[in-house]
Length: 93
Length: 467
Image 1 (tube, each protein chain N blue to C red):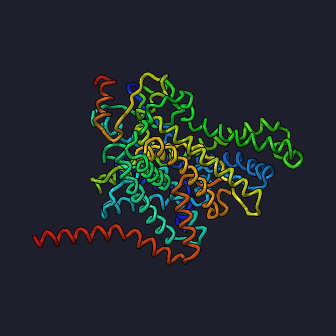
Image 2 (cartoon, rainbow over the protein chains, first blue to last red; image 1 turned 180 degrees about the vertical axis):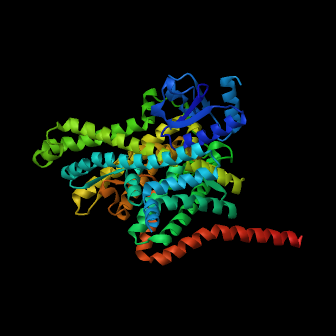
């Protein structure tokens, strides 16, 4: 559990878009063969710097969370390759 | 015998029943025992949280309703999906859960056997529509297996038809055919797109203003935070009624805020309302978190070539400014109807239910309507389309209240266009026809796309044979 990394994905309400993000992140993470990754979803209010190792949201929300540094914005929400590319760049896999 | 009684009790306990649906979903996904237990408990927790949120909302909204009536002599209703679903779901948990789960199966079936190949992935809207259908059909006298089958067929049908109606416009917005829209505000969006088309016809040849070139103040981004926007809108509503009651009807209204100062009362109650909605949303999120991935996984196996239909914010990147213009114009549309209804109520003897502006509905639906209007008709299409959307959702919210019965208790109603339209149509049909007739109508409607598909397949096979 010590090496477990946490990805927190979010959208405005934490209901619709973040559910899709959650499912696609899990798919991307398993295709990248990354172990010990926990993925959770929430709404934009809950986003704080130390709550996760990596934050992921839809690209248009990036402006609303400019105080977060460890964040990825996804443009094409159904494109798993984009997730894989951006996650592996972030963690230099 | 005792065990049988225990099992019956177990399955008729709403929270347990929902856990069972999640359990089946998790087992279907072949998750580990640890994940199955955690997921099932989380779903049950989600339901409990939803229930708790419902109590908070009611506590916050009931005084408002009384104060509004004292101040204006008409009923004031706050349109908020979470508020009314939390009441309806708690009351009809088992029927709603069954319709919710089976409705998703019907979506997959219809996508598999008809040309409407869309998988509706906005789980919270699926749940809300399931709740709406349950309330209206139950109020109309339908019950038991007929209620569940009618409800799930209808829900499955809507989950395919609504994305299909919007797909031409979504293709224009996103520039591709890869994703569809899963949001039950189709009525407003489609009308907004048609308005955009008309605007385009009138302005033929003239240059369209690019909405994204307009500079909007950054401070508008705080409206993006739902809890904040709900708090602000409710506070303005509460402030107005409390002020009027304090100045003109102090004796009648005093018992509502009792020892507390009227201004403080309004402030606390409005934020309590936002808190209640937040709690319900948290509950819904936990509830559907285990079920929707199972739905998606299952649908990918059965209908791999189906298009995923996604929540409306997936349209937002295609018009950052359009979002705010759409929200504001839709909001003004709502205020326009509000003022009209207040005059109507105070000058006639009609029992009018005033629909207050629903912050969340005007934000999400107004923004999406704005983007639809903009895609077809530029800035003019955006402004007029979303203004009309605001009018539509306010009027429809008022109309569907008739079919809600005791649910919402006259204080809240559904906010998004399709919930209200489907509610009104269903409610009217069940009033004029019997439950059996409506049941048959729904079966026929569900079968139509499948029959059409089969016939066109037979037609093309006959053509090929002739060649």
